[in-house]
Length: 320
Image (cartoon, rainbow, N blue to C red; front, side, top):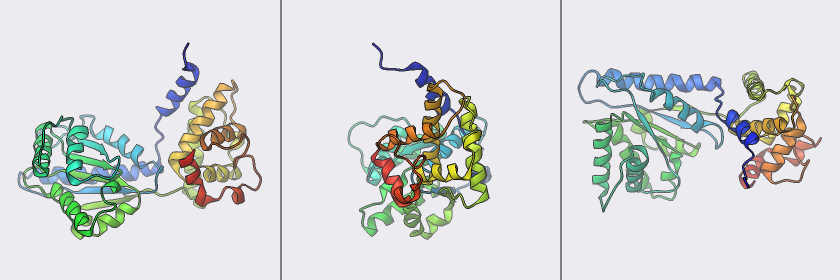
């Protein structure tokens, strides 16, 4: 007996494997291009230099990690050659929770550089190993995702030490590394407290959906049609400002949550065997995610703005 519905699984796989090209992706790509061009031009001179980096911030579930990961896969595809003759390579490390600088070094070795660690090593030995392996493997940069986790509950002295350490990665005379630090908005305050580090990191801001702007209305419209078309569904009857307001409220104004709900609704509509997607599919997907009673959603209730308060919607998703 199998517990896998293969038709549903294939539908999910087809939609989850898609990548929608947001307008903001062009902005992020331009910043990556700036960072790599700066690195190449300095490294080509054959003398010590400071690398630069990016500070990518925004609310949770806004799409930072997905956009960054997509661009990193393009950078790491072997097509971008650096002055040392090797292709550009930026490894990614996710900070799952609060950790010390020593812990971060171990995490970088294991997750980013794929190097097992044995026995006891000092903090200095760990970070010396990080630099040695980065140079040996041709790694030119490191992306630390959810980077805010390294800062909470630390003294001002501890935070200063971490900020100085990030700066030293960019400035190391033998093998400077580009840094991409991404996380929630509170990360901006931590970085801004160290002026020299803030100068070396160019800020990139991901914002929540604002339906009062023409740009975001067009983006949301294109996004919905793109996923529905991929699923072979007709989205046209839902393409109204009223529906988009309900969708954005249901998803706490977060692009990442809109994509998740779109996928769930498209799979639900496909499972029904029809060629059209309607509010009932979005309602079903939302209540299943949020753990609410059937039919109780912003898509079906007239007075949804009062009953589904904007400041509480993200908490609803987190609890669901």
